[in-house]
Amino acid sequence: QVQLVESGGGLVQPGGSLRLSCAASGSIFSFNTMGWFRQAPGKQRELVATTTTTGSTNYADSVKGRFTISRDNAKNTAYLQMNSLKPEDTAVYYCHLEQYDGLGLRTYWGQGTQVTVSS
Image (cartoon, rainbow, N blue to C red; front, side, top):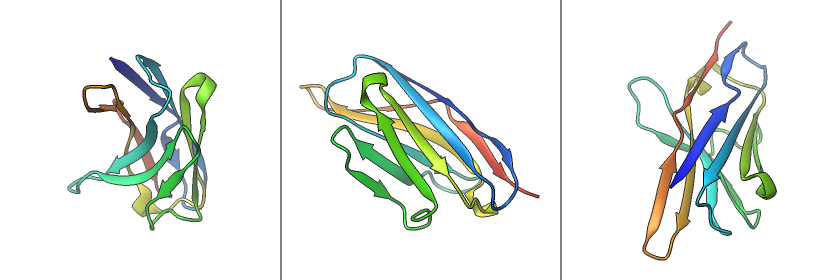
């Protein structure tokens, strides 16, 4: 099993910045993908950004140029630096880890952290 613990959410004014962290623990394999999804009220959960243990990254078009995902493989921790935040970034942000365990592809989710962008 894998446990994901997020931190760093909160209330910020438009144009401000926040940094989210996600610490993974448990049975983590050497190759995995970690990332962030978000879900706003009344909307479906959507991809924000992902990163692999080899450093590949992927971003939603809506956050390109504003958000940066990174990770520390030694700590099994992923980070999401969010700059130039907009009200439409308001959502619950969920950490996500995906890995192949020999039997199949497994997906794990954190409990979510609220990000609110408002003046």
